[in-house]
Amino acid sequence: MWIIESITSVFLPDVAATFFGSPNPVSIAITGQLVTLSGAVSVVFGFLLGVLSVRYNHKKLLLLGVLGVTLGTLGCFLAPNFTFMQIFFPIEGIGTTLIDAMALALVGELLILSKRGKATGWVMAGAPMATIGGAIVIYLFFSGAGGWRSFLLWFALPISLVSLAAVHFGVPSPPQKPKTVGKEAYLSSFKQVFLKKSAAGCLIGIMLRQASFAWATVYSVAFYRTQFGLPTESGALIVLGAASIGALAMVMGGHMINRVGRKRLQVTTLIVSSLPLALIAFIPNLWIVLAINFSHPLIFVVGIPAGTSLGLEQAPESRGTMMSMHTIFVFFGFSLGAALGGAALVLSGWTGLILTFATLSLIAAAIFSFLTKDPCRP
Image (cartoon, rainbow, N blue to C red; front, top):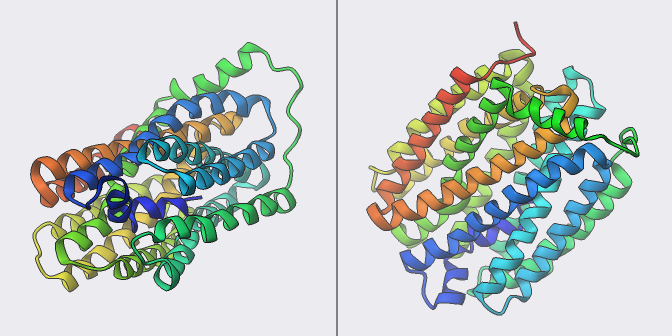
């Protein structure tokens, strides 16, 4: 998952130029709304997944997710206009929703508590590791103006097929679900998620956390390319560096969970990471900005496994539903961040956009601090 998202990060100006003629701020903002649309569709599907996860085997749902990513990738490659991109990019988002939710639910089902934190970190590190590979191949082979289509065909699509085989042969099957599930089982699962203050607080905090991270996933490379004149190759290198830091930070965060605590680690990293992000808006030197920018994902991403693991433990009997809702709120957060970022960019430029994301990070920290409880610590 997340490989195709290179077309809304590294290739964002190129995709805008392909369909709108030029990579001006308005066309970049419009193209960035592919993330908003995908997130909105994923929100709707995620509620359905919350029901399906009560009834169906989580491994089979995971396989279905990989198929969705494959179909979405192929459709985006073939898209003759922006309308088709708006159809197939959300299909990939639906697949990613399935993968994200079911992979984490399987961690909760198949592993004991002491191993879940580390496993969560490693599983979540898979996406930035894939981004690292994507950035390398973009830099080496696909940096031309039309390179985003070749990238989808020769890299993203084959990786999706390899992933399909990996899930089929490498993921254990959890215990079979009962053949008949009563209405009470579905209602009970959603009640544990939405009527429990701490669980609901986790979901809101995760949504705002991911909204603030839209800076790194959607707009940061476009900022460097438009404000400092960096070519596509340099944008790919920035993504490569950030993804490498992110993968390392995911693993570090997973290993820190048992020692520091899920809630404490998430709150601390959100507060501290907002400071370097805000500084980027006021420093005109590229190299200083890059140095500061790389410190932001290092601190921010360390806390992501903690927040995810905190949510995983909120509803032990309804992990499939909780992780489905977790994924909904992640995509809702990305959609919110992309939308707010696009509005801020048009209304107040890059400074307003950056400060908007820093503020969202602080609000997320407050939500986690006051509305959630770590059930694994006294």
